[in-house]
Amino acid sequence: MSGGGDNRSEINFQSVDSAPKRFAGHVPQWRAPASIALFSVLAVVQLFVINLTPLKHYLPNHDWVFSPYQGNHVIAVRVYILSFFISFAAFAGGTPLMRFKFGCDIVFTFILGCLVLDFANIALFASVNVGYSLNLSEMVSGMLGFGIYSVKLLEWGNMPARIRVEHRPQNERSALTRLCITFGIAASVSISASNADWAWVTWMRSVALLGGIGPGVFLFLPVFFGQLYILAVIDVLLMRPPPVKPTVSIIVPAHNESYIIERTINAMDKAAKHYGGDVRILIMNNNSTDDTEELATKCLANCEAATGRVINVPTPGKSHALNDGLDAADTELLVRVDADTLLGEDNLSRAIPYFTDPEVGVVGGVPIPPGGGLFDRARLLEVMVKHGFYSVAMGAIKGVVGIPGMFVIYRTEHPRYLGGFVEGMNGEDTDISLRIGELGFKSVVDPRIRYISEVPAEYAHMREQRMRWFRSIYHISSRCRDLIYSDWISIRGKIMLPYMLVNSARRAMLVPLIIFGIIEYVTAFNPDSPLIWQAILAVFLGAPTIMAVFATLLNGIPKGLICMPEYLIFRILRAYFTLESMMSISLSNVRKVQEHDYRNDVVSNRPIRVA
Image (cartoon, rainbow, N blue to C red; front, side, top):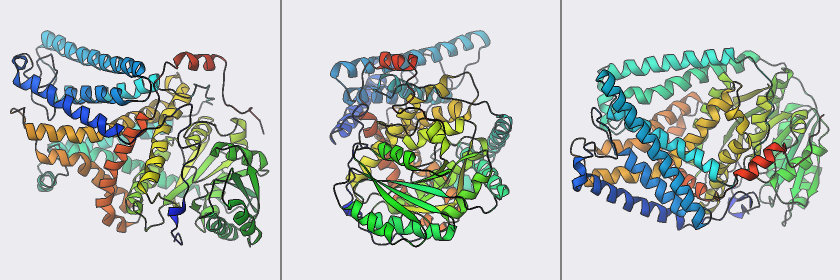
């Protein structure tokens, strides 16, 4: 597929969705560097105090560890976590008082968790004369830090109110069986690899792919998700839906899209021609100030296979446009397409037949960058890993949380039953897919369905997009906390949402982690376990490289391997944007408001309509 002419410099990317005023604030570009600078100072000071003052006699493990552990560690994880917590709180969103309260809460909670871990080791050592290793303690401390950061930001951040998520009991036995078996196989392979003496392992360590960590750690994820990917692809192939051609509506929210709207409509017209059924395009002109309406009207009139019209939506906001499009649709199936997405010719033909299965509720594919832009090569590997690999794999265990709104198909009755697309927050596409899944319907991600989705060409646009995307996991988790705290079994709620929150925390803390590794390497405060340079590089070179190679080859795009350097650099930039995104979350005492909304069952800001 080809994206045609590249005029992305004309994009007007700022909108009311960039930072929903109730839940996000402006982040000056100096704030993240200031936080990282403070982090560096705090880290150096703590390492100095622990290693070069009389206090070192009481802390022989070269970290804030108050228990006799066996072995050594790679880095002082607790120093790193505490430095990050304090520096983040100092520059987070909200008033100085709120930042101080948040900082105290997150720091003291982490200290308490570490003390519990240390005293548990002391008790174990006193009772059976055996304790656990320092490496294990530091690893648990790191995971504890990621978890505390996510939970506390969710608690203190100004977040969407909790709703009652309707969950219809499903038979999770097959999904849980697959999960347990694939996990067990991956663990067995990892343990076997850790105990093996292979020449290629020595080579991987030498080029910083392992960084001193055993091969089993890095093999686990590829083996685990690789099994799930194969199972998911087999599931998709076995479905073999018959070719059907029901009438469908395509809703396209459009805000100042004159630079691309004609190409978008023409691509949909070609897809409609290939499909052969009745396709109705609804361009939802959302408060545009350019000539989007005129261009779209003219282009729709010239369509050969599809029909359509332009509907003006004066209220700013993508969800407003989506909901007006939902109101206007009069077909059983609803296709959502972003205005900067160019459908592939076979997208409708491949996706729509899946709905012959009454259990299917959502269908999507894999976005492909148009190419030629500053970030397009890096984005290619990113989508191969995230959408072409992880999202496909999670379909094998009913773990797909969301299918991106760039191109996705629903049964029209489902968004209507759920009250439409949520307004005033980020992540409305993930929210609706997640809740349709909890109603008991399958989400299908077919890796053969590929479409072109625009990639920001400028730093400012990429920053705006990623801050919006990365903030959405907190908005969705806050709104759908029923899934996390409920007493029913839901892989999305009990595994995927918590994992996504912890992963978001890990990504926000990645740049400080790399800096901390450099500090530890340069200062060499810990002579018992000096940090090797390969370990620092492995943080962003090791596992990401392995997973990217794996995903790219599975998706049949070997040319993506030449994009590896840009992708690895982009991951660091992406982590930096995550940190800025977390700083855009305003801290406030909002828990009372959320409880009030929850008691009064505020489900949506739109009335629930049952089709």
